[in-house]
Image (tube, rainbow, N blue to C red; front, side, top):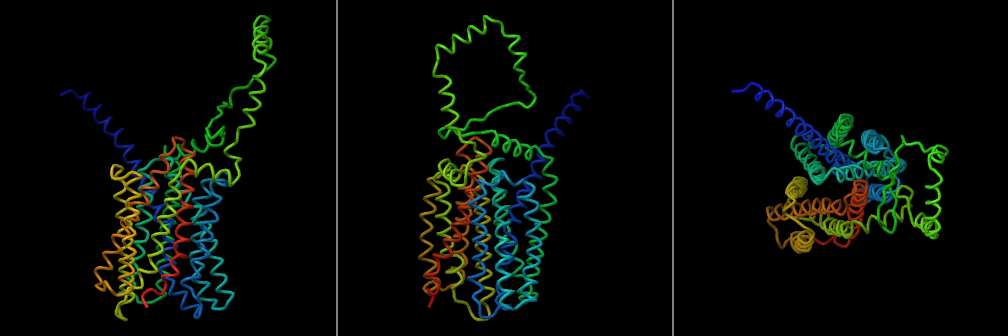
Length: 453
C-alpha cells in the first residue's frame, strides 16, 4: 500500500467534503429565510382572535389583513426599480430587525390601547410590517433565483414550513394554554426565526454564493438594453487612457490609414450616436419600463402566479373554514384544516425540487384541474360532504398542489434568462405577483362569505 496515495485520497476527500458542507449551510440559511419571511404574518393571522377580543365590534378578521396586503404590493411593485438603491444588508438584516420590533409592539398596542387610536395604530403598524416583509421576502426570492433552482426550492419549502410550525404551536396552545394571549407565544417563535436569519446572514456573506450575488449586481449596474438585448460594458478600473502618449506612439502612416478609413465610412459616427440613443441603462430605467421589460422576459410566469393565488384564496381559508363542526370543536377543526393545508403546501414544495416532474404545460394542467376543489369546498361548506376527514383530505390535496405549482413557477421564471441580475428581478416580480394574487383572491372570495347558510 502506497502511503502517498492514502494522503492524496484523504486530501481529496477533505476538499470534496468542504463544498458540500458549505452548500448545506447555505441551503439551511435559505430555508430559515423562507420560514422567517412568513412567520411574523402567520403569527398575526393565527392570533387574530386576540385582536378581535381587544377591539370588540370591529371587523378585525377582514380589515386587519388589508394594510398588510397594501404594504406587500406597494413595495413589491417598486422593488425591481429601487433594489439598486437599497443594499442587500438593508433589505435582509434591517428589514428583519424592524419586523422583530414591530411584531413585539403590535400585541402590546392592542393590549394597552383599546381605543380607536389604538386600533388605527395597529393598522399602521401592520402596513409598515407589510413593507419590510415584502423587502425581505422578495429580496430572498431574487437571491435564490440568482443561485439556482435548488435554492429557490429550499426557500419555498421554508415558507411552507413556516405556516406548519405556527399551526402546530396553535394546536399545542389549544391543548395546554387555551388562551387568546397565546399570540405572544407565536410572536416569540417568529422573532426567534428572524434573529436566526440575521445571525446566519453574516456567515453567508463569507460564502462563494454571496459573491456570486454581488457579481450579478455589479453586472446589472454596467448593463444597458438595446432593442431588448442586454449589453454589458466592461470598463476595467485599472486601465487609464493617456491620449497624449497614444498620439506620440501613432506614426503618421497609421494616422493616415485611420483618416482614410473614416473617409470611407462617413456614417460610422452617426450610427454610433444613434446606437447610444437606443441604449437604456437598466439601473436608471423607471418603474414602468422595468416592469414591462421583466414581464416580457418572464412571460407568462407572473400572470400564472397571480391566477394561481386568486384561485387558492377564493377558497382558502374563507370557504374552507365554513365547514360546520360541533360548538366545542370549532377551534380544533379549523386548526386541523389549516394544518392540513400547510403540511400539503410544504409537501408540494418539497416534491417540486425534482425538476423532472414538471414543465409549464404540466403546471397549467394541474392549475386547471384544481377548479374541481371549488365543487368540493362548496359542497363541504353546505354540508353535502359532511364527514370531517373529507374536509381534511380535501385541504391537504389542495395545499399540496398549491405548493407544487408555486415552486414550479418560481423555478421556471429565472430559467427564462442566463443573466443573474435579470433572474433576481424576475424573482422580485414573481414575489409581487404572488402577493397581488393573494390580495385579489381574498377580495374575490367575499361573494362566498356566507355560502354555508
